Image (cartoon, rainbow, N blue to C red):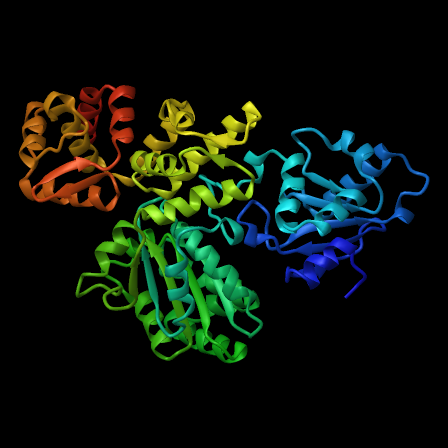
Length: 500
C-alpha cells in the first residue's frame, strides 16, 4: 500500500479500520476509509485527501481551498463528507471552510496528534468531524431514499436470513416506506462485494409491464450485444438458454433482486410464462431470486394457480420493535455526542407517536437534530418532542404515507372510524358496527366482508390495531393530524364519488 498519513495508518493498523488507496488527484494522494461502523452518514468509502507540507509550499489558504474543491469536483465527492489530513496546523484554513455548504473536514497536525493520543480515538475523530459539519447533516436518518451500509438499521435478522441461504428464493412483503428497497439494496451491496464470480442484478420492475420488457432488460444488463439475437429468436426458447449460459460463464448463481414486482405480476395474470421460466432457472440452480412487493405480491403467494405460489419464502417487514427503535434513535445520536435527559421517556414517546414505523421515527429524529443544531445545545429532553407532529413537513410526510399505502376502500373505513368514534376520542376503540353506521350515514353501503378486509389491510399497513373484535388507531398522532388537518366528511364524500 502507498504511504499513509500517520493518523490513517494508526486507524488501519491499531483499530482495524479498512483503508484503501485511491488515485492521485491534482498531485494529492487520496484514500478511502470505511467509517460505516460509526452508524452515521459516513460511508464504507469515506474520501480522504492527504495534504503534505510539500503540497502547500508557496500557496495561500484560499488557493489551497480552491485546489481541494477541484479534487472534490474531479472525484465527484460533492455529496459526501470529505476528510482532509493536513500535515501542518489547520486553523487558518478552517476560516475558509466554516460555512454550512462546505463538505470538507480539515484535521490539522495538532488535531491528529490529539486523536491518536486520546483514550477514545474514534470518539475524538467524531467530535472533530461534528465540530465542523452540522450534526443534522452527519446523521444517518433518511426519509425519502433507500439506505445502505452505515445508515441501514433494524433489518439485520432479515438480511442475515437472505445472505445465509443462497439456495432459497425470498419474497419481501411490506407497505410502502417500510424499508423493502433498503433491505434489497443492502443485500445487493454485500453480495456484490463478494470476491467470487457471483453476478448480482438489481431491477426496479415498476415500469416493466410485459414479459418482453423484463427479458430485454435482463439481457441488456448481462450481455447487451445479444439484444439483436433476442429480436430474431422467440424468447420462450432464447431466455432459458441465455440464463443457463450466463450461469456457466460466471461459474456461480445469478442473483436477481427484483424490486416493485406488483405491476409485473398484474401483467402476467392469465399468462404465467415468464414466472415459469424464472421458476425453472431457479430449480436448475442457475438463479436465485430476491423479490419485493406489496399488495399483488402478498395476494399472489397464496393463490394455488399463481406462478408465485410456493416460489419464494415470504419475509414480512413490520414496524420496528421497541428495541429496534431504540437502536435507531440512540446509537447515531450518542455517536454524535448528543445527550439525553430521561432517555427512556424520549424513546417511549417517539415509539408510541410513530407506532414504530421506521420512516416516521427517522423523521422525528431529523426534526430533533435540526432543533438542537439551531439551539446549539446537544441535549434532547421530552420537552423537545412537544409539537413535533405540528411541523408542516412532518404532517405532510405522515399523510402522504397514508395516501400511498391505502386505496379508497381503506381510506373510507379510516374516515368513517374517525367520524363515528364516540366523542371523537382518538384513544377509544371502535367496532365494525361503528364504522358501518358511519358509512351508512354518509350514504355508503359496504359489505361486512369488505369492511373486515379493509380493516385487515389497515392492520398490515400499521394504521389500525385489533384486540378481540375492536379496533384502535396504532398511532394517536396520525389520527390527530388527519382529524385536525382535513374535513373528514368532505374526504369521505370524495372517495365515494371516485368509487370504493
